[in-house]
Length: 249
Image (cartoon, rainbow, N blue to C red; front, side, top):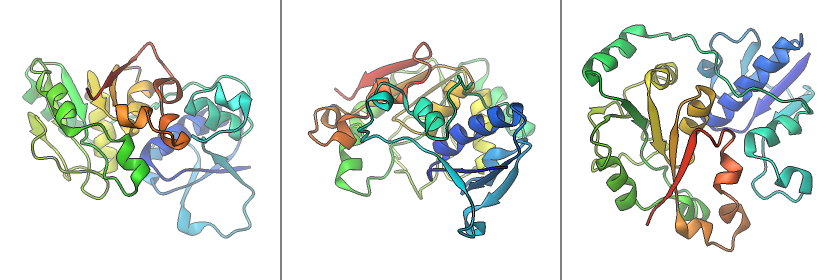
């Protein structure tokens, strides 16, 4: 039995989903502890909440370190680091294998798009400390990029708990604060492309083999704080052939 958890974000949970699928294919019995049980829909593992941890578990932590001092890990992207941290040395496919749970929602979005490419994005994350503030792209640049995507049907997702609402962000369908976790993953399966800062949508896009445009903060990349300036395309992109880096200039 492998008992495993990840860091607290939804993107971390999607990394853990891919890792769990790999372990299950190896014939392992897997128990997952998570804040995001909905993200493991269809995974043949035991899924428990973090509140069910007793302290007696022999937990593996599928996490990556941004401020890494291990030279072997420094050369790896964050998904590969998470795999290595739980002792997986062979290649792991970053994938979702997700079965849509709300097909009516997906079909409604496709119908509203009217044949236009569907672009899914979420507004910038709230900054809870100075390092997070440095990582946020400038909202003017973020929204200007969205405004330029006029050929796309732009769908805004996310929740006010973690994100700015950003009423000025251009969108054609506003689903902010209007979806469940499984709904928003369903929406990701319908997307043709994604846009945002580093967030769970990047993980979903790569796992679905779809293109993602990621906006980075120049202030963050120029920061002397290693936990900030280390957040680079080389760190966050696992499938660089699908990803494009842009900057908030």
